[in-house]
Length: 154
Image (tube, one colour):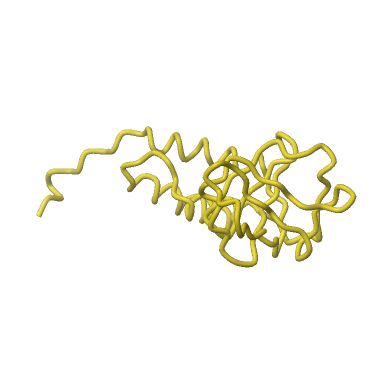
């Protein structure tokens, strides 16, 4: 029920917006609605398949096409907006909350004084649920608006 309300709220917000792209806050809310309880960590043996910042305090990483993790960061990670790649610390292929970090990389990221972004919490994401929500939002944004009833005009 909580997930359905979050998806509905996102659909309304997306419908009111003139831009078809969701804001970082809307995308974060969608991933949070599809995220499970926090876990200690996850395996990174196959490497990252993809990643996306969700503002400067969270991001999603994909370890397989249908396996994603919501990483909530300890503080703001300002270089995420400028990163073209990331590095994730791990020991033995295991990324752990509260001990591992994300390092934004790329030509626009400052090389001097770069600060790793510590991972505060890791939550598994229902990747199929996120994809369904994205499809629903796309469909909702392409639906024509109903004309107002002239009798209801003031």
